[in-house]
Length: 254
Image (cartoon, rainbow, N blue to C red; front, top):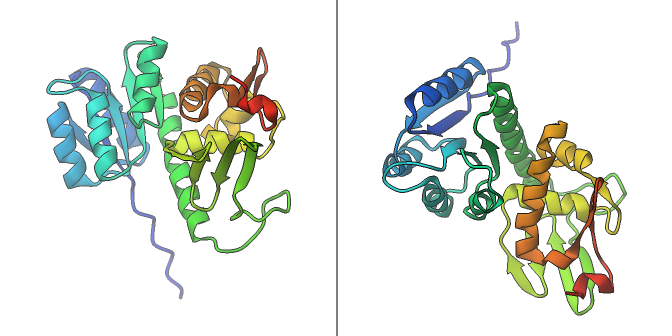
């Protein structure tokens, strides 16, 4: 009689939040959703917990005692890259871009629903699994018949943009650009359809693996962060619809 396959190990989420009531609610919801959890309430404690627990993802508040979540994110990403969902009480664009620039993959603005929290964490972990699977895949073709290991060469001759799908690296005008996993997936989604307008809803479904009209601001914030890294002129906004990656001479125009 064959034995049933072993259950996959539970993913561990490190929650870093100094507000006890919110921290307890987040930990309880994550545990109910089938995750293991660890907890820290200060910046220094978060660094220590990340080293000891080796979490699969972080739920990280921006405002923390000791030093803030941005510094926590920078230090952890420098030591052991891990998906980070940042929590912020402020909705200012500058604050959101600062979080993404520090290495966060996604963010939630307080107050938020626990259902959305779980959806975001699940999507982050699914993306990590996909990246690992792609790294192990040595052969095959994309849906369009292209070799998935072949870099995408875009932009104009004097303003090139290279998206290396196999190595998940990007070069803009000859210089390597460091992108977060979500930023890379967002750029790749546009690069697969150069010059074509891709709606915000399509980007949400492809990159975040969820579709919700309330999430379009998430797309907009990540696009702005991506523009800062590869050049604002490379991504064209089509108001009320979405975005397109410019590939010709217009991509090199200021």
